[in-house]
Image (cartoon, rainbow, N blue to C red; front, side, top):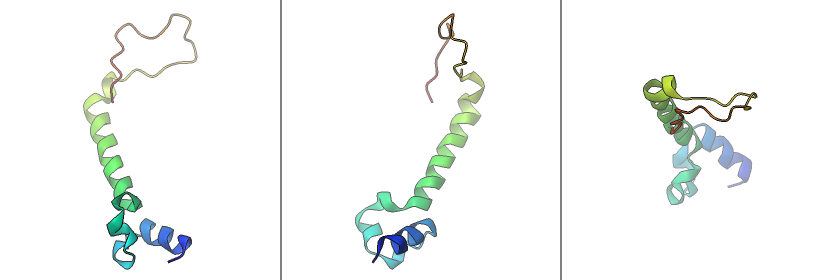
Length: 70
């Protein structure tokens, strides 16, 4: 199966049309996107209010209470 067809199948979640998706589950792009989206949503819901983003003004260094583990 040619590359473009594989990409189209992966983006459309048509995994049954090519054995490569069974042989290498990491190629299941739509599934990976959904899983990552759910993880990100959960991280933001549980830790988003405590996440400190760096600003362009880093003269004073990072925040003293920086527990940025997401």
